[in-house]
Length: 132
Ligand code: T46
Image (cartoon, rainbow, N blue to C red; front, side):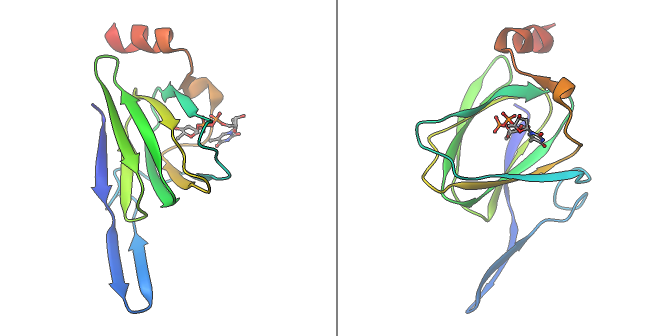
């Protein structure tokens, strides 16, 4: 499975906490794009796609949601619910995002610019690609 949960370097004192990632040091790619997801609803799922080449780091800045990760052979579930944990997802991983808490906010660091041609949004095509 081409994903892992990372502990983000975090500094805490009586003022609160500060977490930091540095490209090519704490995460394995240069960051070309940052986007965020907010105003989510518990009954609405997202994702349902894979990326041919893109890698991403996802952090739940507030609230929680479940990621379903699938490499075409195995399907696993991961909860994101802390801003000092990050989910790294490599290429060729099917992802579904479910069970958002109200007000969940996800921040995503991506290894490349947005390119719709880089998405595989059909699960059967994804299975063919990863199993050939
Ligand atoms: C991913 C998960 C975690 C853009 O125009 N530029 C962008 O950079 C992005 C990310 C999206 N869009 C447009 C494309 C769609 O018309 O925003 C709309 C919603 O995107 P999408 O339905 O792909 O959103 P999610 O939440 O299903 O998936 C997103 C990312 O697209 C995807 O790369 O891994 O978050």
